[in-house]
Length: 191
Image (cartoon, rainbow, N blue to C red; front, side, top):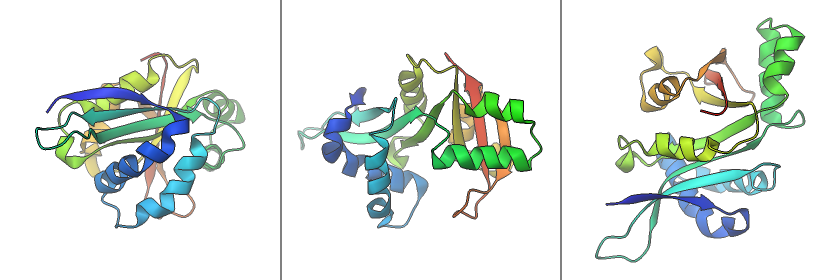
């Protein structure tokens, strides 16, 4: 079925948020109910400066007139008062980065907060299309993201990020509240 990309509006979040969260929970293989916990956070994010979101929607088949969200990407301008920024700065400090490097990394960037494609739609370059569209007109000089560490970097997300030139900023970092190791990756903009 044909896929098209659509820009999502913050004021319409109540309409698109349930379907976007379903994609997120399914793609991340989180337990049912996670979407209820994450919904308030995503609703808060739409009010952050520079927030932008793109969805991949699948056109309906003959049996339905409803388009289905099969991919979601969003982010916003990073800022020093945000939890993620504080976590990354702390991790860089513990890793021995000098203050000037930490400032250069965390002062002016777009945070790619979420990028997910439903497993039934993966392998069709939807993630890349979402990412390219989301970052196309950003004014920040760089983009940062975090992703779970994977042995040998062997999954679609890692292959996408490496193919698009994302480099290591911080590896094997553990965010407070999550025992899994993460990598923080970044690259200059534009793509």
